[in-house]
Image 1 (cartoon, rainbow, N blue to C red):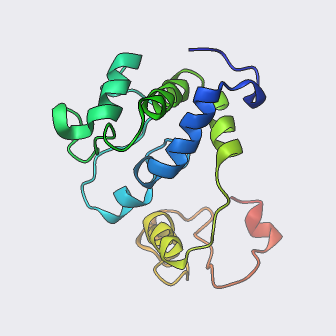
Image 2 (tube, rainbow, N blue to C red):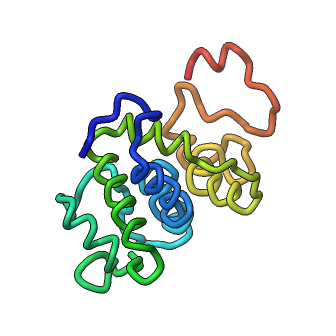
Length: 173
């Protein structure tokens, strides 16, 4: 795998890998490969989908195999096979991107940031994200009364019903 001095030096394959990743992979693996995609948030007991740390596929050939066959031949049963939907070039490109995520996260994150398509506000996705990451502390309605509010007291979760947090509160975070 090549070392990237800057995103501008990314190979065409890595560029294609990032674009394909955004199009096909973020729903499960998240925008940066941390496993925080929407599908795992919707499904209970969904397996860890983080790509930044190798759990099973550790070599280029093993990564490529998982991308090609998904869960059909020993991978996660939740992972789809891509060999019938992606070209060999796209499979190789995504494989290189996953390897880069593990070898040089900063370069991979910069490439993914540069190639990320513009986001469109989606209230349904926003609701899922809030319930998944925020409601435990801030409460279902944003009043700062989530079940973890009893644990976090210094500072306590801020009521999100206010449009601006006081400066004194922000300095305590």
